[in-house]
Image 1: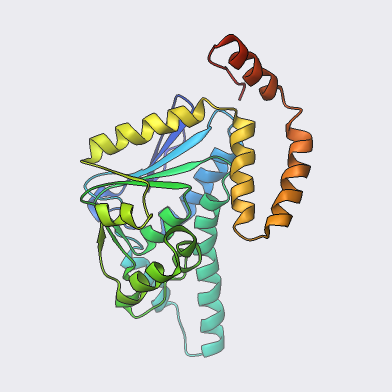
Image 2: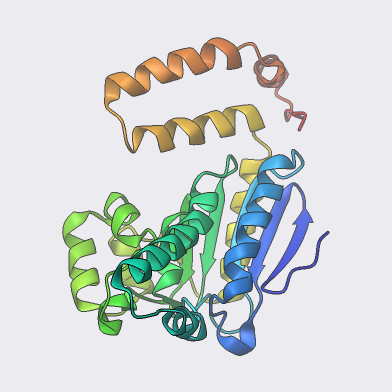
Length: 270
């Protein structure tokens, strides 16, 4: 397993555990974080043994968001020409967006296990995940508004599809903190847990259950859900018809049917 500066990676039972590993910096997202997450999710996408991903944070918090030193560095690189500054900043923003697009576009389900702080850029990150679970003491906040800027790495684009437009606007305009139980009530997370140990136990139980399913069926299901986010119903029906014209010929269908008939647990190939 490759060693990273901002992450720790573990693989067991076909579940990859991706841990943001800067606990002494409240898991702030520095330059290493933004480049390494792309490499990690490329590896996940290309590694058949990985069927599900759990994303968590080391230490007392999930993540405090983007490292302010990174913002300061970006500001120091600006010159006097407004046009060139705008072009440089746009490239930087698109590069940061690509980091979380890698999570969103991953073929495998990505489950966020959130405890403590989940602030600013961390909201962008968990919004790109398939499912979110948290501890009761988790704290969520779209902090960009209090920094005098609009969130620009995915929160405003993805979060309305998770918690609804009106609630997203309230949180984005106020920057107020949402704790675990309210996060569950508004649909930001699926379930809450008493503490981090219970959270990880519950999330890994779920991840292992998903990992036992047909990987072909799981990847197809994720692709269809993602596709429907940006398309009409008739487009989605046309796409799934074309997709399944091929995928229904997979050996996984025969394995699943045989297991069902014999009341045995199916064993799918990677």
